[in-house]
Image (cartoon, rainbow, N blue to C red):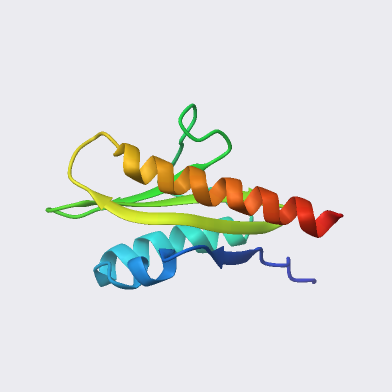
Amino acid sequence: MTEARLMEVVFLGDSQDIIRDFPDDVKEELGGDLWRLQKGERPLDSGSMAPALPSVFELRADDKDLWYRLFYYMRDGVIYVLHCFTKKTNKTSQSDIEIGRKRLNELKQQLTKQKK
């Protein structure tokens, strides 16, 4: 029996530093969903960020005070974590969307250069 190869996870910008400061239960929840993605499974709580960020998805967790979000983009067997943040309302702030957009654009440019 051969083991399936796990997808690599790459954290961009300050995403990894931010997620490290999340409460332990939230890190466990988001980490579990990242693990499922790595194995090619569906995360328990995920959603599309289209039309604001086409091809970007978010992992979601919450506690009594905050909603925790992780934006990710998948390409060529790699999960790129674009942005991690907290929010208190149903609406994602324009500044968080812009951070995700900027990192996605930079990543796509970098990947295009690597292929040349």
